[in-house]
Length: 419
Ligand code: EPZ
Image 1 (cartoon, rainbow, N blue to C red):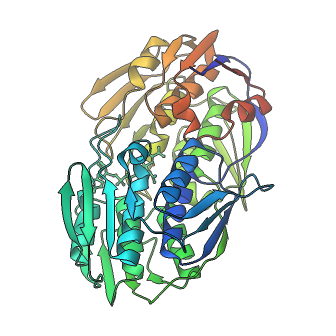
Image 2: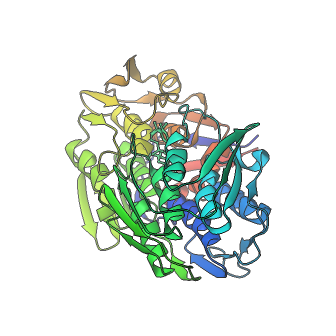
């Protein structure tokens, strides 16, 4: 079983390039199923989750693969999709694959997708996705762990999500692109990944307006065409790399990222005392006078991203003064806390908040990764710890970070992969 070993201490400094966005890529790959033709995406990160989505697309009959000689390009040909069914064995590996349901239902009038079930960070139901498909006239039934949806043809409708859901907004937005008439989504998610998906759908010939706001309008069209698109940089990976620099008292510049899509993260880093410099597609952060304690509350975009919660918690563990980190998006996203406590962090949990008293240094220790972002938080903490930390179960990290140890080594970290 792979593990990552970190010798804490060195100040990280230098430049590192952000990979393409995992969460944008996954939704964009599902969108290619809407097209009776070929779609190509560039700047796609080489991640386990992307490979899992390629498997799902092939399972429903699409021709989907990495392009030979172009390590960050995938091509997806949706012209021979024949079997709109996504099996349990593939969906359980990566719950975002539930986003194939909207495209399959609206294009083929039928979709059968395994219910993704819960995960380490929460129950994560898909009731809002199903509410959306039903509002557009889809007939939904649960059948032995599968969601079966059928329709003679979706009809545009107005619906309001009860909770702001990113993949729910994306799934229903895709379904509405080929529906008859106009759909209005209220309380829609405003994440940059929703905006990028809407931009790509419009490049394919769709008519999506208002993405980025909480009301999105989609006018249905007859068909969509294949396009070529370069995926935006990953704002969560970029944020993780900046905290890796700050926690060591270093100076890191991340390139290949649009600072505008990570403003709430940068705002919190500034509040903690970091000097943040922005360029057109780069961000630099350092804290020559050290960091101070702050309050962080996660929320849907443009609020502070829950996917950056563990990383800033790890960073605040070595800040001067106390901090409070409150998780409002997922009900069980503090799995990294007991592991940080094993490294000597002074953290008390009460309800959905973690109360931290900053300390000078953490201690290296063997720790267990439980989910993707928790493991990123442990990696950040390990960089500032005294001695060696072994992060076990790093397959979690490989789901969302491309060659993370190489990138950190490039900044001066003492990191190696074992196993
Ligand atoms: C997306 O998940 C991201 N994943 C997550 O990133 C991210 O944490 C999350 O958005 C929030 O920003 C991808 O884009 C692939 P939600 P998603 O639906 O869409 C509840 C990572 O680390 N809810 O916005 O699944 C839900 O339980 C991953 O890269 C319902 O109640 O998240 C949660 O409490 C982890 N019913 C809240 O809404 C529904 O039908 C927000 O979840 C849907 C969601």
